[in-house]
View 1 (tube, rainbow, N blue to C red):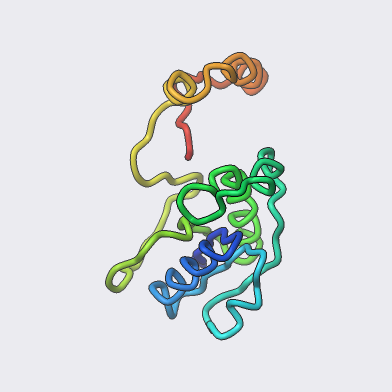
View 2 (spheres, helix red, strand yellow):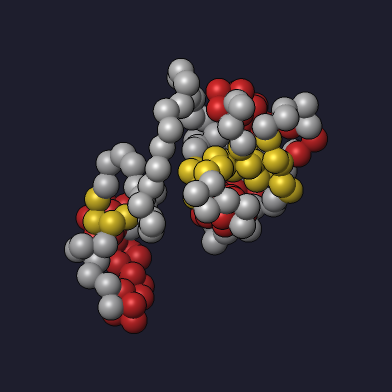
Length: 158
């Protein structure tokens, strides 16, 4: 099994944070999906791939005037999946870190069972929709019916 770490770093504040994350993870490889790949050329453990926000909320992200690194990038969160996809084309396991994450100390060897592995707090899709988007509930129910998924048992992945 090969493991590679990945992140999404769009705009200067996130690229700066991703550089620090790369240093924290060194010598481990980090794939960075970014709009500024030239900023990573001096880091031997980074593979920087060009990316423009293209997820469902990208238009909001591109128009957002608050791109200061203080939450203004939330509209691009859908694009994190592209970082995972690119990483899985190069390794059997992708571990996604938010660009603002820090890794303190040396990483211990890790292994994962096949499938999706989630770390941190979890909630069901139904619970998430109840708190953050009741207007989307019907669309999610329709999709869940087509996929034979119970929204009260399916885990929401932030």
